[in-house]
Image 1 (cartoon, rainbow, N blue to C red):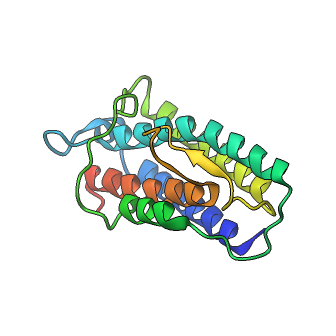
Image 2 (cartoon, rainbow, N blue to C red):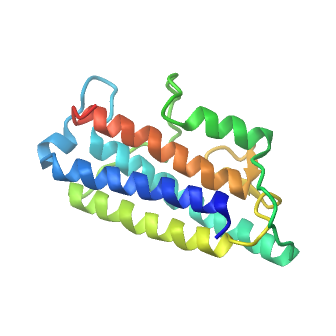
Image 3 (cartoon, rainbow, N blue to C red):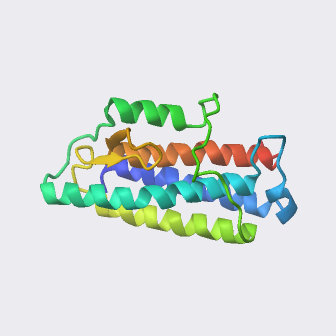
Length: 181
């Protein structure tokens, strides 16, 4: 696997490992407790990640099909592009300004915390399948239209990195809600 895609794969695994660690240290009430007004519970943080992954994965598959149709292989380093770089930097855990979540991506907790965790893990598996399928394609040449704002586009490689950064940010927030950070 391309080293840069392997790095994204490792980031996704770290997110999954972090979620497992949280699950071992918190009960249902802890997962659903909001740490303050207008703050999300750990369960809501994970639900938001689920909603985000559910929205972006179809876009990734479409962009990958375009990359496959173009027939270009990519042994070279993948590039984020300016928009991708800005989004990845602004979505990671080191970014502090709060951004209002768009309608449709606000957590709407339905079911148990176990259901939310299981959905996250299933989506992680789908992201890994998508990453493996992208290996060898010129994914930094295939555009993704953001499902969060149709005026924004970035390349597929940036999209993968964006998902990993977004997960790190909200899992950090989940850890804070659980009192583990």
